[in-house]
Image (cartoon, rainbow, N blue to C red; front, side, top):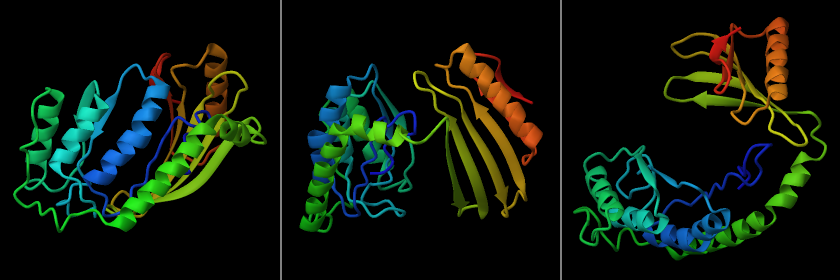
Length: 256
């Protein structure tokens, strides 16, 4: 629940960490009692469903119990404008059924008969302890969402002009260890630039380092110039082998 949005967008991200063993029952409960009310209040212009399928009951890398019918019902409730197929590693037992359910749901057709041959309703019944955990999670999130503006003010207080965060990331598939420093320029009344200094070591690529300055599309000319000055300062200071500026509404992507 601490992943509640970046320093300039507190409350802009709602991360709901469902526990292992969550099935259709828990997923629908979260949708109806938490996600849909938040969406209604937020009133988005467009809804995109990133339709990952890792939490299917047959997925070998997860420990969830969602079915194809559960995915279809989620799509039915969400009424997304776009659905994009994402991850999922149960290629034979999940993807054909889940994708069928999603397509039928988006088309407004009956998906009630989409049932996986391997599904056992007794084996994959959601436990009471998981249900209790989800109830508590929903209650906590309702409080946090209601207090998002106060939380944003508290996070902003004392930060100063520059918010920074240094942390490490380990990529287990390649053995790469990354050290990352993120910095965000905090203005009182407008969006600021966002820089990342990334240093990687080990793995098949050897030592790598890059500095990237991101200028958001909402940036005004003052923010753009500040970002370029900061990127040039970082390059003069050294510490990376490449220095890249990403300015989508300016000069695009280029190296210093």
